Length: 186
Image (cartoon, rainbow, N blue to C red; front, side, top):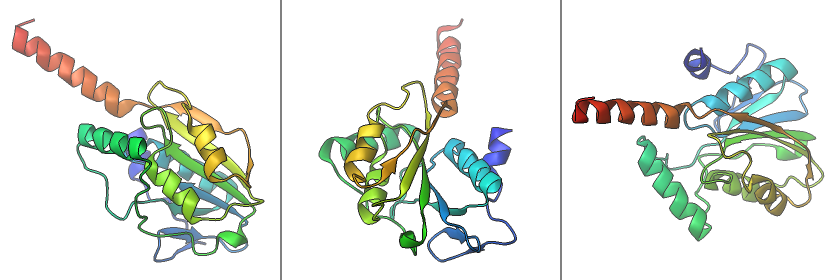
């Protein structure tokens, strides 16, 4: 079910995508901006978008993260430790037109992914209501709230939504356990 929802298109008939990955609704003052690697956060973004009739923007790094999960984990760790903010593939065309921004992302290395810091640095959220929605693999919010407060200090940060959704890591662990059993003859 999650895989089907993650693969489903998020746009709707009344919306028109622009060149930056943004879907606009006529008259919407609310934006759902999200970054998703495995699809869990994309599903939550789609549900918020459809339920509230918001605009939608997918946050993407200019250079995609590796397909390999462990390579992505290592790259994200290096970026986090160095404070690196990757270039973005696109920016929200008219951030000034929004009063409320729902910001979705997975927790990486017990914090917000580097691409989220880059998104916050690239957009002025002063005076806007900022509502995070976060997926994680067992670590909860980590230090993501302080990242949001630090990178969007003039936004009105609200309590968000947090959901454990660590399918990728669980799948990897289950497969490795199974393969280890085969290797050891158990």
